[in-house]
Length: 556
Image 1 (cartoon, one colour):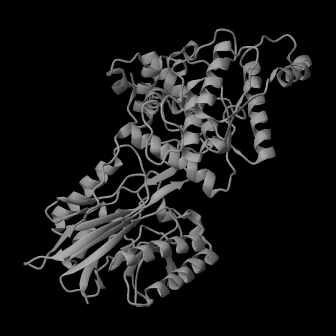
Image 2 (spheres, rainbow, N blue to C red; image 1 turned 180 degrees about the vertical axis):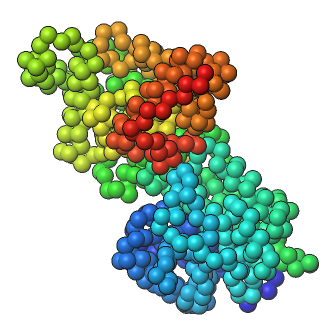
């Protein structure tokens, strides 16, 4: 039994969704490390055994059976005198499926608690696959009553108030909360509210790692009942934090920890999230490395830099695919970027296959003027060559379109949209420029690329162009990117009306045009590769607009 003090280990680790045996092995390693550090209780994140979010995997009886067996296997770790464990697991009981946390001690599962508030917004749709659990009471951990609200249960007040009213002495919150800008600060604010309402100390344990388009950023923390931060674990890095819990004279608990990390600023956090998302997508899906077209432009350059930071230069292959419109400047810039990043760099001219397409289509196209069709043939030829390299050597193609382009359809299906993953899919063009300049002066922790200038300055300062015709620039068909990106942020993230956007000083006809481009490009986005979520609302699970859609905001 606990007397007046005990130690909690907070595991901020990176499980692999569906790798039940691997997750058990990871949990066992962390558990034993915590035991060596004299922990009394080891806290894991939400659905750690299965990985999170499991989505429709939990509809498979074999999957649920494997998770339950894995929990009982892991429970054997606690048979000897050592720490207890709180770990997330999908659980089936009475023909209903729950998002559960298991309390394991003495070699067996002593208690289960089921998630009450199932999120059904943004990237979450848990109501499709899980049943709502009953309002929980506290778990008896060796004489201490611990409340375990699961992730969303702590974002509202009902579950935590119920736990406080039924005798909980502190709150331990296992989470699967994904990254977006400002999320760490928002989590802290919400948890401060729970502490104020319940007058209980709270430990927030968050998952780490990339899972398709979302990245879980960790940043776990602990709060005392007086709202003072007692522990801050790193953001976007694996760690085990330790919290000392001491009973005070009035019977309440005080938390102390030596773990107090500084959270990165916005640009560093965005960069590390993009790198982690790409790394985990490649690693968890078993690719040998990546290949991408290096055009001499800013988007491919930043993707190459992120790929090297994620995987190391030896696993990144850059290919220049020049045609008649490719400038000497672009050739020089692409080579300089490849040399700065120390990657393999090849040049594969595309004139012959492009002209072959032209020749094959000439009888059908006779009498028509050259235009976008011929431009797209260049892009699609490049995409085909990159996919061939991928098929031959086993490297995944990185696609390089930014959010501005993805918004307005300024990308070619089966061309530059080819690929398995896009690290900058949720970064607007202006953000791509800012982050590129930032990376030239910083190398974040965990990044494998070189220090110093990795994206040549000329790539950042020159006018952007797709180089699909003579003297082409992006602004031939799009507004300046600072204008475009502000309008898109208003339309996509904020869902603002045309009137409200115009009140910010934008031209109404320009807003109408961008809104129309946004809607008619939906069919392209449905076929696009996944990419890291960075903003509050990404294209994908966050934003689900119909492809067939005649609505336009014309209230002005």
